[in-house]
Amino acid sequence: MSRLAHSALHRVRPGMAALTAVAAVMTVGVSDPPATAAAPPVVRRAGGAPSGISTLTDKLTTPWGISFLRGRNAALVTERDTGEVWKVSLDGTKKKAGTVPNAVWHEETQDKGGLLGVAVSPTWNGTTDQDVFFMETTTKDNRVVRMRFNGTALSGYTPILTGIVRDTQHNGGQLAFGPDGYLYVTTGDAQKGRLAQDRKSLNGKILRITRSGAAAPGNPFGTRVYSYGHRNPQGLAWDRAGRLWETEIGQETWDELNLVKPGRNYGWPACEGSCSVTGMTNPKMVWKPDEGGVPAQLAVVDNVIYASALSGHRLWRMPIDASGQGVGPAKAYYNGTYGRLRALAKVPGADQLWLGTSDRGVDKDLLLKVTIK
Image 1 (cartoon, one colour):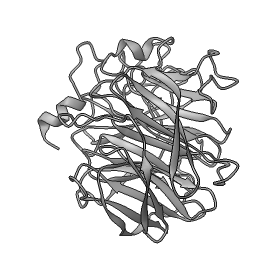
Image 2: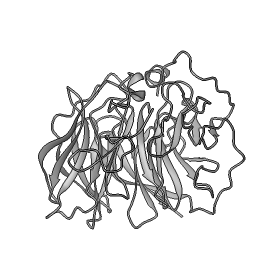
Image 3: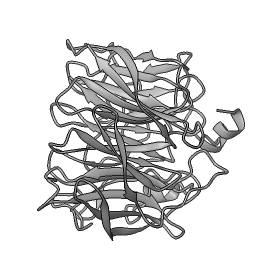
Image 4: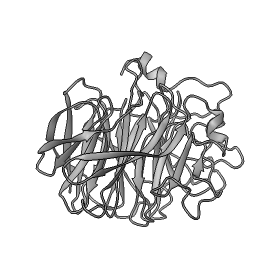
């Protein structure tokens, strides 16, 4: 990724809290209230590490989202630039499932919008429950839509949450059903940082909604907002204790791994990375954008967090520590081997990840299979 393109994602912001470090990756303290330092983490005995990688399928164009179909040994995979959705089986066989209407993207920027996240209903069976949810950028807004998938083809199109401010950058876009059965949605600040702190805005947030798009019961403010103060969140995953982790693309100084709790303020635009501003919640780890950073998506295997990196061109492994409130030392894999990496998901019932390359060109991206041992 060129420095010019990188700067489009990480703009210098005046008044940013001063932070100093020499490491490309730095763990930071638990912030309740925010801390500026922490004792060395105590790492629990966690799962294995990547032991092999192979091409699962090819001829994709910027795969963005992956969501597995319950009981079908296959997943739906979105393509950001084309609006197309593929059904990909565990053996790598892929068939086109359909297209999500109205998705548009912007070729001149790295964070283009378009067809983004996908979340298959956790009770999907192809008959009585055919619900699949998508996040897309249209000419007017970012929105969450519901479609039907019968195991072969997509049909229908029902917007359930509209009016999320869109831009050529900072659209967020991840969707995931939580252990509680509700749909979580990441939204970017659309290059309008003030929206991240405005609790009446849908932007710069993690939202928690029902299948109809309404605020889920128990949300901290009685609205769709679950947490706020986010710049461009793109990764969501839960660990085995039900804790929610998130990756967030920062500006020029730090990208973040956050442990998300309801009602918390994650700082943007007052803070980038760790800071001591009252009321802000600090990240659990930060990356320098030019040195392995710009983390995209998350998956958890046996209480180990994995994160794909765009500018970093690598897969990060981060074991959750014994407290469950932080992570141990991070290790990177496949540094530069496959280029930009984005789409990432754990294969149900297996110690495997699906990992997608990004931005290689029309029909040039891969979906990779990573084995964890």
